[in-house]
Length: 339
Image (cartoon, rainbow, N blue to C red):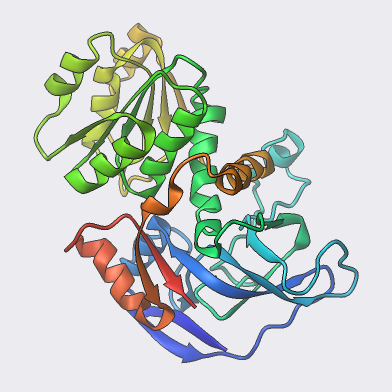
């Protein structure tokens, strides 16, 4: 089967690998689309903490069931599915505490033992495989994974509720879908920022919010529109300046959620956190309920999610896709690889 292999930082090649087969308690999925994520970009740039070349990247996927391992029930050949790409051990402290997303022994695609989704076929456990609705396109099914990240950030960690005022800093795919999740949770107002006007405006259009774009300070314009500041601010950018910006724009007693990954430690004013009694929390991936919510929202067409997809390229063009994300030479949000 064909796979897009990250051979070295900055170099992806299409190669032939042995076909994968489903083992006991596994499903074989014929990949239709694989999403290109920011973490794939980090690996491409040589900055990912554990996805190191040579590796088949990708963890966002939708396709059809092509093989059923021994002992698997409840699935049929041809079922249209997406996958929550996280296997928790179920026995470590975080798992016992009900937080499998921070499992100490979790396994994800793109590490030894679980091939990434930039491949013609992908193997997954039935417990993390979700059927898609009959009217849901497989291209949309890929968005369940990044949308689940937004559900976890906005709703579980940010506790966005009807009436909340929400600020999202960064309008990559995760920021856009976090804004959508906030809207669907009932946020009364949403503001979203990005370096690139296209991304900020796309997010604002999808969540009926306000967009702010550019490299100069945006605080004055934001505060002019929202003088009482925000109940919840979600950092979906890895830009160090957004940390202090979040503290300037969040109301006293508000919540700040850190979803974006930073390449280096960021100096933080702990006194401002104390005096304003900010509730600061991290957010990483999702749990099964977040993922189920994302699938249900996509199946129900709760938002025009397809607008997030700006490019669909063949698997052979994985190098081009990652270079486009890295260089941002044209308007880009979510890139899919058609397999």
